[in-house]
Length: 234
Image (cartoon, rainbow, N blue to C red):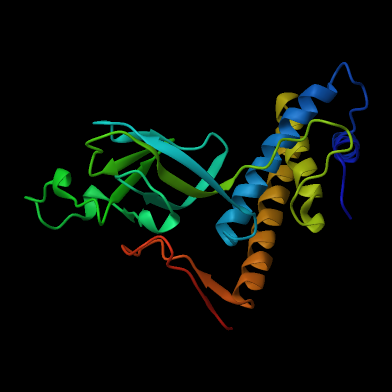
């Protein structure tokens, strides 16, 4: 059963046995519901990165600037595509491979010598570092394909975009945080363990669905053109 924001809030009051809105405000509950929602979404993406709709965002390449911010709503980058000259079609982009300095075998390897035909990226925290560094500015020279964070719950009728079977877990999380605030640590710990167990169960179930469906490869590790996509039957 899908639960709206107000129904989730009522669940928190039931689980915590706190009906007084002065003791535990609706605003405080909403903050913790959204924190729990965010944790659930991250767990879903970990289990099945294609569960949420893929988003696309373009960005500009700036001369002699290798560092680019990730989209503010980004949970996970699936693919980065780069065009070091003004693109006129999607075929002008090249799929960037992942660069990890800790995996470099040749100590003499010079990062600046990476060819524009086979670019690399290093994604750390909220930024993406490009190799090679652009030698000139290019409007819309980059593309992110990524999984976006869903909009937070705000209105009483809002519903989380996760499977309905797991909606109550957000209320469990918020209830645990409320009990922690009021120093009822035994109940807080019990509720948090319920949240953790429920999240792990959700991940197992969603991963099972992923295994039983057709596989889709988007060639993140490919150094070819940006049109490299294919479907494989199960």
